[in-house]
Amino acid sequence: MNVKEYQNQILKLCTDTPFISDFNLTFEEIDEHTCYISGVLDLIDSSSLYVSEYIEVQIQAKCLKYRFHWQNKDKSLIARWDNVPHYKDISTSPYHLHEGEKILPSQEMNFSLIIKEIGNRLI
Image (cartoon, rainbow, N blue to C red; front, top):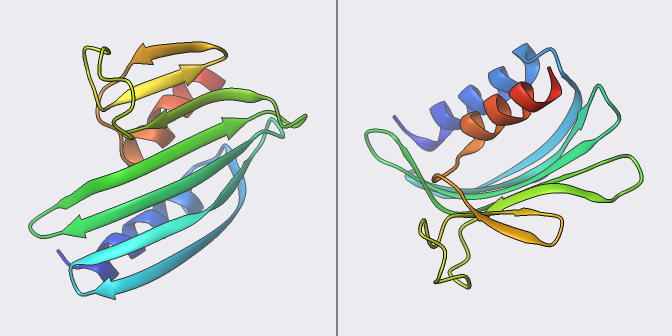
């Protein structure tokens, strides 16, 4: 797999996911194996998902840094998943989830997992 193939997978996922009403993504290709993806997905419940992924693609994509910030139409945080290593006491550090004032353990996330997670929460 290369960066272009990964980008195509992301675009197809956005196009094929019924709860994504619109999306605007930027793909900054650093080289054939790394890229930075950022942008916003508008969801059918009027919430928005802001995405930021720094990806290394070899055999499969590996998310080196990420932030997925989901907010409602009033711009209040619903949830944010990231891997900034600032909560070292979390059992899944550096992977964690912000829900309101709570910081919770989280599995390592990536674009497709976050779409699946939000789909489960919306349905």
